[in-house]
Length: 166
Image (cartoon, rainbow, N blue to C red; front, top):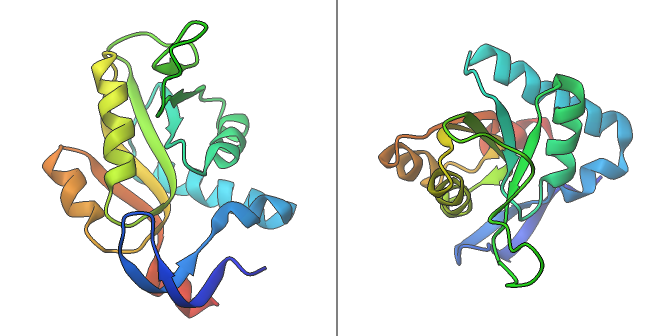
């Protein structure tokens, strides 16, 4: 499927990497996509975190969050990274109540910066973010950064576990 590629890559956070994980290709393989969404649901149940909403980190996983929303019945939200100063100019897409818990979902975590940015938007609007779930944790600092913000990082795979499967 080509989701895991080897070579010389520059990651979005500026790091050099010899492995690139691109899960944006997964929705094109419906059965694999559903399996990934279900695997994330299994982790959600295993960590026993209660959440009122799930939210994407709006750089890639919106379709995955949509699939999890359908399978779980938990409504989704989407923090807006770049506000356009037009229309309603909302910081979060979706209906929500302040003080409710949100589980952030991302496809791949490297440094945790994207998750941090999304968490700040949600928290600024009065929502509670204590957990984040990713399909793949590259183990390059995300867990440490998120922990400093009192956010627990949960994963389906570490990068090394994923590489053993490919």
